[in-house]
Image (tube, rainbow, N blue to C red; front, side, top):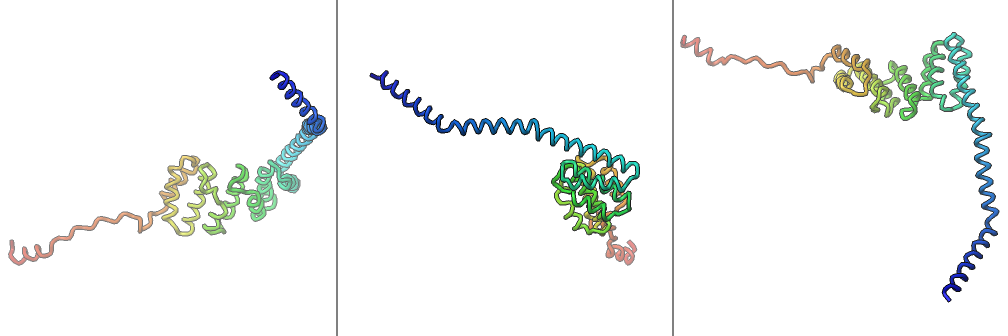
Length: 240
């Protein structure tokens, strides 16, 4: 009897599976077709298309770099600006070259700085962080210490070569504004900063040798011992 019940249960399960298959098989076929179509679209249409776009951008960048080297600043600026405006992964690098082109071609320091500041990000790619640091250097003479710190953002706290350069700029600006104590503290830290390039460490040594120690932090000179006046007077009076 148990065998008969098992056969009946199995038959019911098969009927349910067959019914569900008949009901949903079109969706299954459709999903499989969509998956195959998506793979084919990516493989034969999208991938070649984006590969071609990347190749064209690389060629445009190479052409612009050659124009810059040859002194064709107008052509180089147009090509670099197009690459920047496309907002691709190549844009931050192109922006650094565009700033150089604008400055060398027309002497427009403000325009070059605007290009760098527009693409620079403290938490971006290395080229974006480099652009931000360059923009800070360009503004160092006119911006206040507070403005420079705001512009650099988290970059000045980053444990990297770029971060060390940002901290060096802050130290120099602090000294320029008359805060010698802060400048010396910053340069002392740079001397022992493991992330600082050797050039930064050497310049920190030179700065520390040149910046006088502020009076309030200089060690006090030892006081001279005063001779006991009473003993001297007693000796003069008694002759002993």
